[in-house]
Image (spheres, one colour):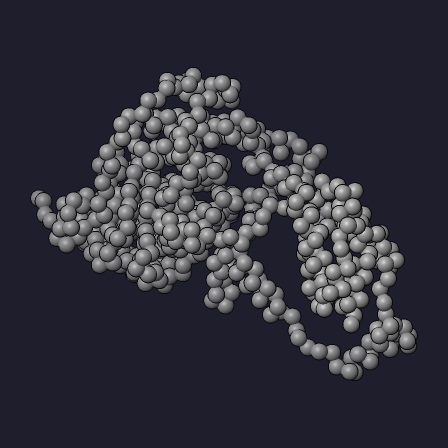
Length: 557
């Protein structure tokens, strides 16, 4: 019996028609051959799709969703596929993780990971279950605590991606709870709390495995189109009513092999949304849960306005200093200009600025280490080819481009997995000869070395690197006591100090003192807070003695 539930609509998913089919040359030999032939490629075998806009970044927001049916046996696989993927947000359900597995093992330093593992607080079962949201470290993100967050397998987070603020919720409702109305109401309450934390222009995105096979979701072709065409259960009705009340609409139409929708995508109705099946899944596919790629429209104007321009530039390679040229430059600087400055801090700024300007103009940048450490020239070239076809596939949905994207991605992944396996074997073999290399690899799996994208202190959140530094400075300043030593403490400390040891009024720094102190410095090439390495003071002490004397003596006045 067919019935309609009026007033419930979903986001319209309209696929753009394919553009005129591009002329694609025949597939290279390495794509048509099965097996790990990519490792035997030469540069002449590679076909690189070149176009005028290939180097432009994707302007949309790209989200990936998959029910992975457990990650414990797929740790290396998920690490390799996510370490260089181009998704802004990743939802994974049925992760099957616990506290013994670090998020660092799964995503490295590429993502901020927010997890809700299965526990006695949210499930009667001890294994499987769980959900996580991974957000690229390119974007500012943070977890959102909710009232009902602990009683269900769900996690909420916020992220600012390309000018838009996303309010995200990942959820897994197991089959034994999917028909429990109280469970559905608790999840709706969490989503309602999530919506209340945003504004009208924010995007609310809820992805998860709801296990509601009795609901047959319709595509919306007009505002009066009903959400479903089959009478759902009481729990299904509660889900539809709750999401409709919050103005969230179900957008996924990628059905599984049985023609059902178990994985649902709810999103705010004001924003353009497209949901497709993934061409290159991150992990093996369960036929009950096809992986999804979700694209959202970005706000290019706000993206430019909110860009963080305070990041540090690449460090200079101070080991390349030509001390002969630097010494000649310092000897020709008119240091007598320091006499016209009344403030010691301004004198120090003038001094450091002269040296750092010369260093910036005459030194190369430090070469960035090859990342990942098992990378080769061929792997990097295959990655560029894969990314080029991915950009084309995201713009045009033609079958030829889809086939080329899948083939290039498969070849890149095969070679990447083989190189990573060989790298791990080398690390294990070299344990005795190079234990430092071994522990570096181990620490990379259990520690995060990247700078956090957001810092929070006393309810204040940072929105840029500069604000994060200010919050750290505020925190460290709070642990220092501002107590001034009393006269009694000063007298006690000076009991063993000989009288008339030093007279500040007559104390004078001489150039010979500067040269003697500089010669004792360790010739380090690491720059200090002034941006000048100690090796500069040590090698150029004769040229720097006079200006430093002027600055030090001014500070004693």
